[in-house]
Length: 169
Image 1 (tube, helix red, strand yellow):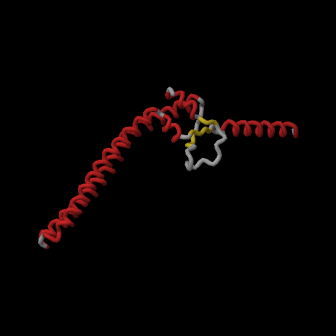
Image 2 (spheres, one colour; image 1 turned 90 degrees about the vertical axis):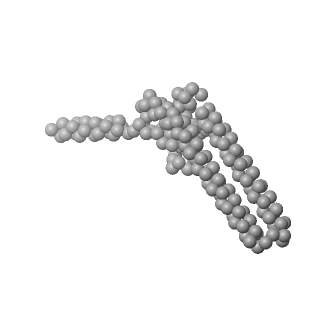
Image 3 (cartoon, helix red, strand yellow; image 1 turned 30 degrees about the horizontal axis):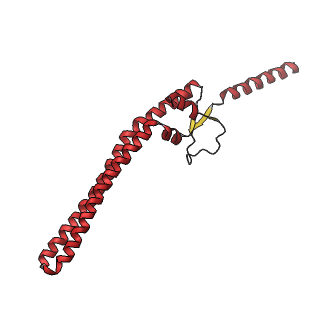
């Protein structure tokens, strides 16, 4: 009777240990930033954003140059103008400065909007590829290993090469 109890306890422990081992989830990691930066679509999007940014910057710099020129002109002519005319010119310069500030804000908003428009499909494509590779390899959890992403130990399987292969590069 004692031996039957020992065997029963051993079987229960064996089943519990086997269940515990099987219950452990498969975990992998991937540096999402590295993946995104190596995608050809991301390089094209970055180039387009840089071009747009340069266009906005050139427009704003042109406006700033025009403002400085007007300011210098008004300053040089201020002695020969009436106080009323000088006040009118000062208000004109303030309005011009305000317009430049608004143009800078608008440019920043447009850049953010364009960035979201361009990067949304790229990140979605990367996410789908990560999900496909994880599913194919039976991975249950994938942790973002980007620097500062909260991952302390990265000894698990790195999915970056397999996801790059899935994306065709």
